[in-house]
Image (cartoon, rainbow, N blue to C red; front, side, top):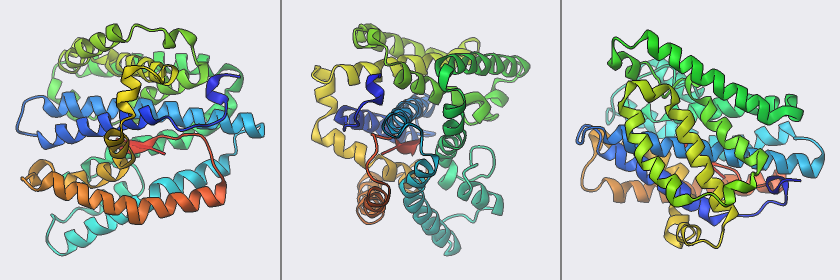
Length: 347
């Protein structure tokens, strides 16, 4: 049995990883239209980190469930997802709707509401205040198909993921080649938003949960971090590297996550397990949901204090009661991702 399939336990350093991811996303959105490439580099990197972490942790949870019960309990899986994601999400949408009806926010077309509520905002809709829901939509789309695939390809899960990553990368290369004459169209065409371009980011995280490779624990992390720092900005800005961008970035991030899990006593893991970062990580879903009301075109000196206050209220009065109900009804499960914008990552 791999370590990933063993008894679940809390991994505080991964709450710290969530904190780093959400802080990068918030910084990117706060700097939107103020600093060139800041949203692309900070926001997209933070989202990639959430996606990899989400794939890793949800698969780790599924492996534990399969190990304990002999099979993945799909009904239990989806019930837990609903109670984790829906309450805070629909409270957020209700508030947006009230503010829009009162004239405090722009009125959105019906497609925006439908796309947001039905988790396909990454493919339809418009408007700043719901734009961030593209990543949560993509995460929910991954959750929709991954449990069934997880069961169907059980003997060859890693082979399936490897084939999927190759296919996704080839499709990105074909699409970008067909749009190479207009880089702006390629950027606006949802290259980072569409499931057919992005779901391999989750799958690479899932692969590291399934395999539990021992070499990851011995990886030279300073070298890995240096490669990440060099790779990601170049991959964002250079068209020829973009087909490889999400896969390479996800691979490097998955190695980093696996290394942290395998080296809990390291200085990096202890730093990421510090109370301030763990607290931000626990609040990451609420911070993700409410961020656009305070950032981007709404950004002001009071934005971050107001966002922190609203997020704490959301966590205290919506998320925690729903999580208690979830755990009471379904029983404990392994650590799961937190949903930020990405969403993302939800435990």
